[in-house]
Image (cartoon, rainbow, N blue to C red; front, side, top):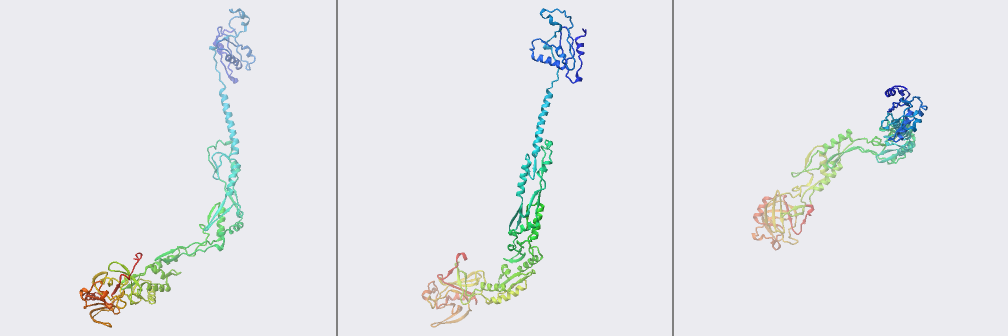
Amino acid sequence: MSDKTQQEKFNDIPNTNDKNEEEIVLKIEFDDEPEIKAVDKNQLDVIDDVVDTKDTKKDIVIDLDDTIESSTTKSTIEFTENTEKNQTTENTDDQDNNENDIPFIDPSVYTYKKKKSVKKYVIAGIVGLLAVFYFSGVLYFNLHFGTYTTINGYNVSGYTIDEVEQLIIKDLNAYEVTIRFKNGEEKISNGDGSLNINTSASVKHIKSQTNPFLWFIGLNEEKDYTLEFVVEYDKESMKSYLSQSPFMDESKMIDSTDAKVVMEEGKVLVVPDVTGTRLDKEKVYETVFNTLDNGDIIVSLEESDCYIPANITVDSEIIQKSAENAEAFLSIEANYDFLGNIYTIPKEDLCSMGYLAEDGTVKLSKTNIEMYARDFAEKYTTVDKKRKFRTHDGKLIYIQGEDGYGWELDPEQEAIELYDYMCKMESFTKKPATIQEGYAFWELNDIGGSYVEVDLADQRVYVYQDGLRIYETPCVSGYPDWLHNTPAGLYDITYKDTYVKLRGEDYESPVTYWMPFNGDIGLHDATWRTEDNYTPDRYTWDGSHGCVNLPFAAAARIYELVEAGSPVVCYWDDEVEYVPADEQ
């Protein structure tokens, strides 16, 4: 028996780390200090099992001898007693067993350090789960497209090849080219005119570019693919198909119209050229072929200049020249002088007299000038026409001219003169060609502002000069019967004379102031009448033979104010025609 202490015995336990086995240190406190040697793993398991299953409050007996022979490392721990076998025990019943007894171990002092294998198991479990997850991803992404994957604009994440092919086929079937004509549209679809649409690559080819074993790398990577459409067609077949379009029918095409300059409504207008619907067919075919080859889906034949344009466009030199000449022509001031009242031919009427020739110069239309002269003469000839007249009390009436009163223009002579003036292409002022000139030319009428107004109903005479009433007097007109009644109408002073004897079948009356205006009817003094004879109703029983009798002083004054040709307006209130309100 060794005399080594317990610590020395413990230090003699061999190190088994070289055999990759766990080293267990067992510290046992014995009263008699038994030997302690290395214990292998299997022997420790026995101790563990005993410790784990025994009541810790009780003593534990471990028989290590049974485990030594089965040890793979042959490292043993031998517990030998340091005391003699003749040790006296209190219990004589147990003496037979003391020779090989294992010392008792107090659980409270039994400790050991063991590196558990739990971590290894956890890691192995995690690795297993990851492996399952990884290979599941491999299987899935071998058949499906990855996340954030687009093909031709479609989000195909998680789609199979068959599902993506269905999308592409749908696009192929929906493919069509729209040809825009000016008057409509024509569409070419897959299969029309030998048109065959396919893709530049297959969906399988795109799928083959992805590695399913590296599926986890591209989870957050955006992948965008484009399958270009490949267009195939036979040109002759396509021409034949296009020629059947109603827009390609020659009989329905409209030619383009040239730009031109016109003079309308007193203005120079440049009418732009208008492209018709007549097509250059060869250019149409070429444009459509280019569209198909480029993979475009819309083409405008108008924007592609497939329509035959006009010969003269709006920016042509001839258009610019024509516009300049037209502006110069309409700048002409063509004036008529009606007794000092100027009438200017409106620009609208000048437009009708000229036109633009092909060389851009302005030519006159003699026929149109003759028509203008005829219309002008008709408009401003006032003889035997009624015109508007405003009475002294503000009433607007129509008054009829009598005995050829007013203007009478000569249309034939005027056409000749006007054409000659217009040929000079410069401004001018001329008198109108007339058969008879009127006394005045006002906007309202040809009476003017200086005239004599005879209100037969009120038996008064008013004298106006330049639109102002400067004199008035009572009068006595003709007796109201068919022979002596003073007629209404518009006349003019034929002449004026003094000291004249007025004769009739049954009378002879000398007068000092004589102003005839309607044959033998005129204005004159009547010295045979007294002042009290000039009452509003005197004419009804003591009227004249038809003349307008005036007090001597009044006749003298009027004689001074009027002249030969001065208008004389006579009217009866109950006979006049009033101008309607909408014509005033």
